[in-house]
Length: 81
Image (cartoon, rainbow, N blue to C red; front, side, top):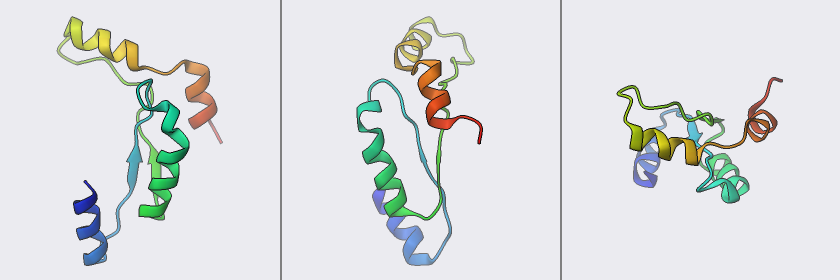
């Protein structure tokens, strides 16, 4: 949360902001990067592949499938350097 980030900054603790792009928020990707950069000098793109549920929940895995970005988008966003 923003409050937690504020406490970390106040304490002088280092931290990494992680953003998780998916279908529901991908239209805000640039704003997510801007926010992450404004909060910490360290940020990373989280698991854009969105792994399926370990318990095999059909309904949860359907939602995960709906939220996954296309592979070419993920590679473009977080590909090899």
